[in-house]
Image (cartoon, rainbow, N blue to C red; front, top):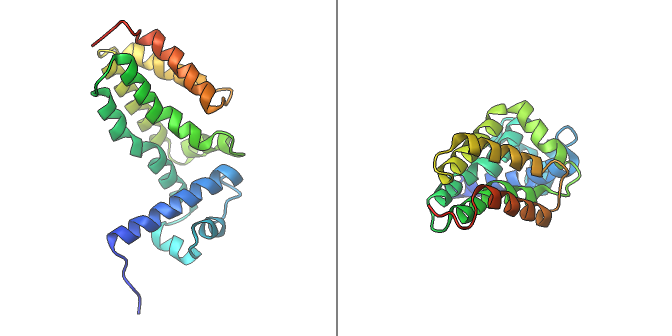
Length: 185
């Protein structure tokens, strides 16, 4: 007799798998992470993994989606929040760039993480970039060109894999250039 999981229990299992898988992918890399590694880290059997996800690629895509795409509603809400454009822009950057970066910086295989996602499901990165650009444009009064430049500059801030503290300082400088403190909207 099998016990049917409630929706909450199934979602808790799924989240546990995603957290374990993200750790494995960041520390071992995609190709060297096995379903057994993920199962051990999550404390569940390989069979239960297959009940939740089709294969390793499906798990990886779900990890990346959960890790980035789940931040979009909060980022969109931050664009309409209280505060100056600079404060709102900092909040969007915190949600969409700084916090995800803090989750992965220093992990042995962090550099591979984005590359694998782009290879497995390029739409996830494109969607994340599109939402980031949309949020920045909204804060900058609809200036799509400036938003695109801002997002490209954000990419550049990550190129030398800085610490989270250094990234935060760089983002603050960038925001000050695009949304000076004396400018209110």
